[in-house]
Structures are given as C-alpha cells and as structure tokens.
Amino acid sequence: MAASPLIALPIEQLRRRSSTKWRTYADDVLPLFVAESDFELAPAITRVLAQAVASGDTGYTPPRHAYQETFAAFHERRFGVAVDPARVRTTGDVVMGLVEILRGVIEPGDGVVITPPVYPPFFDTVTEAGGTVSAVPLLASATGWSLDLDGIEAAFRQGARAMLLCNPHNPTGTVHSRETLAALASLAAQYGAWIVSDEIHAPLVRPGVTYTPFLSASDEAAARGFTVTSASKAYNLAGLKTAAMVTAAAEPAKILSALPMEVEWRTGLFGVLAGIAAYSEESDAWLDSLLVALEQNRQIVADGVSTISGAAHLVPDAGYLAWINMADAGIDRDPSRYLLHRAKVALNSGPTFGAEGEGYVRMNFATSPEILREAFTRIAAAL
Ligand SMILES: Cc1ncc(COP(=O)(O)O)c(C=O)c1O
Image (cartoon, rainbow, N blue to C red; front, side):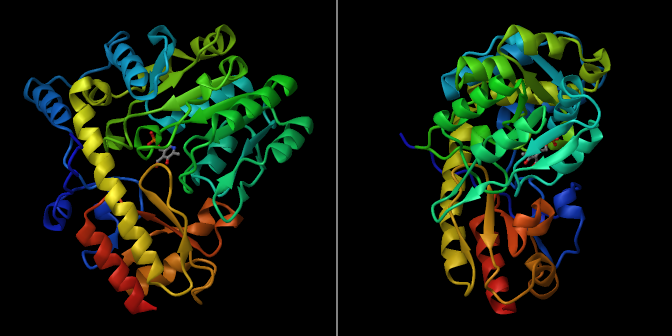
C-alpha cells in the first residue's frame, strides 16, 4: 500500500520551537530558509530521546555503539549498497567531518575543488582545513545541472588535491549518475586526488530516481573516496550533533583511523541514540511518508513558481530545497532581501552559494502545504 503523506506541524506549534528556523525572524515572517524541517519526529526517535532524558542518560558517547551496524543496514535496505560497519566512524556533524578529512588528505595551501552554486559553508570548510578554494561551477542546461568533468580535470592537473562533492547536490537537488561519479573517480585516481562526498540529502531522493552513493560507483571511487553523512536532514536532528564518516577501501580507511581521537569524541550521544532509531527498520514507514509529503510539496512549489512572472525552477530530484531563478523578476542580484522585507518570507540568498547564485533564492519546502501556498501568495503580492 502506498504511504500517506506525513502531515507537517501547525504554525502555532512550530513558532514555539527554539531552533534557528523559528527564532531568527519575527512572527510576521514565514521562515523557509535554513534546512530544518517542520514535521513531528519519527516515533522511534521521540521514544528513545524521551527515555534518555527520563533516565538522565546525557553523558559522553561510548567508543562502540549500535550506530555503525544500524547505519550499514539502512544503506543496504534503502540503497542496495554494502557498508562495512568497521569502516564507519562518527563525529559531531557533517561539516566537522568534511574539515577533518580534508585536513587528513591535503597540505596547507592545496587546492580543493568545490562546484558552485553549492552549500555556502563549503567555501569556509576548505579554508578551515587549510586549503584554497578551486571553484569549478556546475554546468547548467535547460534540463538540469551536472559536474564539469573537464573543468575538474583541469583543476586536478593544476594541483588541486581534493574535491568536496555534494551528492545529492545542495541547492540544485541534482542526483549525479553512476557514470558521472565513476568518471570523477577515474580522474581522482589518475591525478592522485581525493573525493570527499557529502551525502546528507541521500535519504531524501525522490521515489523513482536512482541514487548512487559515491563509494559504490566503482572500485576507483572506493579507493579514492570518503563519504560524510548524517540522519540530521531527513530526520531533522541537526541540533543533536552526530555524523558518520565512511570509507570502503584500505587506504582511505587508514587515513580515517589516523584522525585524532577527539574528532570522534565530539559525537553527540543524543545524535547517536536518535540516529540508531532513525536508521532502524521501524522508521522506514515514517521516511516513506515524508517522501510522499515532499513529493506533494514539489508540485506546490512548481505551481507557485509558475504564477510568479520572471521566476523559473527545475523540480529537484532530491531533498527539500528548491533553487528558484528570479533573475528576470525585476528585483536585484539578491532577491531574498526584497522578499524578506516586502513579502515577509525568509529564503536563502542565492549569491551566498557562489557567484552562480546571483538572481536566485533557495526555498525550503519541508513544511505544510498551507505555509508554502501562503508564501507564494505573499511573494506574488509583493511583486
Ligand atoms: C550539503 C550539506 N552538508 C552539510 C549540511 C550541514 O550538516 P551538519 O549540520 O551535519 O554539519 C547541510 C545542511 O543543510 C547540507 O545541506
């Protein structure tokens, strides 16, 4: 039987939340910016966290826990990919994992490829790790975005030692094909570069779209790659601070085990407990219902964008973020500013994703159909 859509919480309840999404702007603003979602937690997560609070189970994360096995079983079930639990290490969050792995594979000053428009913290992630940003923008076409493999090869040839891959890609929602990922891995093997793949949006790939975890794309991908991911986007657990760092071959596994023990000690115990509950089979039905809700919301966003003169977007293949081109809407290079003040809708500013984001806004649609429709009504009125 097809899952029914998960129902988002009503706005009165959401406004009582204390997280960034609900505390940054005044109550007259609809917050559709930072990637938090507006649903009730999966019941298994609520249960395990309530038990932990009730028993004061708020200490340090132990060195061994069921997270690795549960994570591996989830990958097998949802993506058909085997993960060796012994090759999964945890840390505080995805960005922390990206920084620490980069530190492990580059020398200070080395180039690190990123592919804008891209999740804005990637720029600082590279510099925090001691690297230099080597931007190779995605190639844009009428039907979507793709990696510029020639551009990436040129960057590797000029000395870039690593690349931060976003798979699926934030903000475009692009799911890279196995062929593209395998070709990227071949380049990495040829030039001795490392690919660090951020797969935080992977559980939110649209039904019917084939997703390939980078490490499973080819033997070369396993040999040259690291994956960093978390249950935090799909299950809204960002505040609990747990992410997984994964390898699938001996050399990267050695680099991962050589990271300082402190990297693992930053793992949040609540994140581990909630992550185990999220990745367990019991939460699959909840995730399926979320995917149905997001699919409905994709249509609402598409309909909403079509009512705004000068706006255009392509339906994302993964995640709950819509990358909307408003360059022809007659506002300015950063339409989010105008829309915040005039429409009272908070969206992410396109230019923060790189120069390629000028004229764009990013809209978070992990919310109720009512809030989304209200946002488009306000935007249309403000224009
Ligand atoms: C691609 C990507 N990576 C990382 C993050 C942040 O993850 P974390 O809070 O685990 O660092 C986000 C948040 O939206 C994201 O979209």
